[in-house]
Amino acid sequence: MSQPDPDAWRTQVRQWLATVLEPAPTSESPGETADLAVFHRLPEDEERLLLERCRAYHRARFDAGYQALTLPADKGGAGLTAAHVAAFAEEESAFEVPPSTELISVTVRLVAMAVSLFGTAEQRHDHARAFLRTDLLACQLFSEPGAGSDLAAVRTRARQDGDHWVLDGQKVWTSGAQFADYGLLLARTHPDVVKQAGITAFLVPMDATGVEVRPIRQMSGGASFNEVFLSGVRVPDRLRIGRPGQGWEVATTTLAFERTASGSGNRRKGGTFPDVLALARSLGSTADPLVRQRLADLYVRAALRAATVDRVARASAAGGRPGPEASLTKLMASDLLTRTGQVAAELMGARISADTGEPGTFAWTQHLLGAPGYRLAGGTDQIQRNLIGERVLKLPPEPRADRAPFSQLPGT
Image (tube, rainbow, N blue to C red; front, top):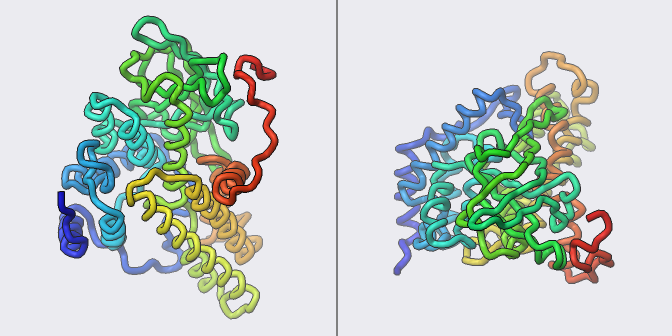
């Protein structure tokens, strides 16, 4: 099947976007900066309204054939190329796209992709399409209190009972669980093999009997993360994703998409270089040579991250699954967030600790309180460095003492 010419297709995209979105503001004045929070801290009713705005846009995008551009058509995508992805992103940047949420990103860019790649034809028809269109929302049930960075150590158990599986365990740091229809869950089904080989992935209905969601209050004031408890939850075998024991492959592929999404994505996360520059100008600090040096360093890092995101996204869009190089974009994103907050705090001094009423200053506290959490989300910075060192730079791996069957490991 021939591909549409990217330039002609770009014109069609621009015309379609103009029918569903307003043009993006041309500039922002100091003090009218966009929300600087890294993680949402909205009341539940406002969060639901935001979700509906996002879903309306994604449904329109799906119906117009612009969702999942590089997925093959038989898997619910448009079957286009990296050039089309780049063209769409460029055209979309000229419009005011509804601000996305972690749950929307997880649904469309992670769970939908995992079900599309590993699911059966029935699962792709019943669930992947609905996730891509956001008719259904899905959270990610991976991390546990004792299995965050060491994800292969999950202790949530799944035992088969006829044509169902019975799940017992606890998950944590689950974004948007209170609004999700399903959760993509990892559970241990085979304890007598090495830990990576004994994991299976499931789609769990979040309204199933035995599922309990408890919000976690963050120091920034929001509660966008949750604990999820599973007690005797029965899940039909038709909701198993991939083969029994294939969960680690599902997980690593999904996490690569997550790191790519965390490193890029169209949802604004915290303050950016233009925000810091506007702050410096409003405070009359741009003539200070030390401030100029800090701003230049921040600009260069932001430009390098954008270039790396583009390179990784193009490689992924060309047909391959995201690999360990996605860890580069995630690590650069969390580092840039931290440095951005540090420069803003240096510019403001004591203003960062009290609201003086000056526009565009005290709002930075939301950035500073949220940035540390981003160093954990999607895999800690330390894990990203391990992945880069071992899988990209081909350095010798760290010594491992957990190669025995999971049931024989200490503490299991």
